[in-house]
Amino acid sequence: MNQKLELQFNLTNKHMYAILVHKNNILISLSTQDPYVVKALAHKTDHFAARFIAQRFAQRVIESGLEHYNITFIRNKIFHGKLKTFIATLQQNKIINGKKQK
Image (cartoon, rainbow, N blue to C red; front, top):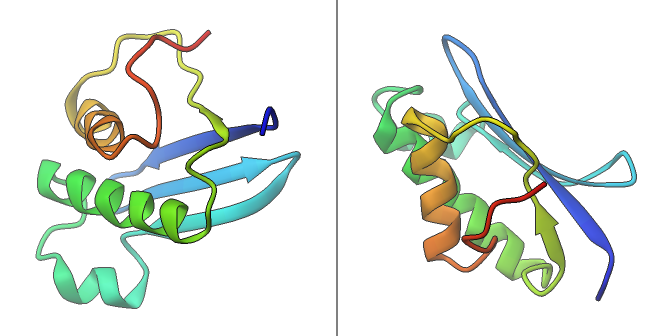
């Protein structure tokens, strides 16, 4: 259980992407381009979309049994905006911890 999984979050002008990676292999990915997400969201880049993506991403992590692994999100800058919403939602779902990652 000491394997490190890396969380990546990308935001463009049109879409959001959440990816869980282990040794350059994608384990879980979710974006606002996924068909069921497209149907559920009116806007693809607002705070509601960030929260929705984080909740569904957390659900996929739990369904995959990966929630007990050390999932890290490395970022040296302060979290703000949609990224802050995304990270806070994952913390509420106990997917990542609330401590600063280095």
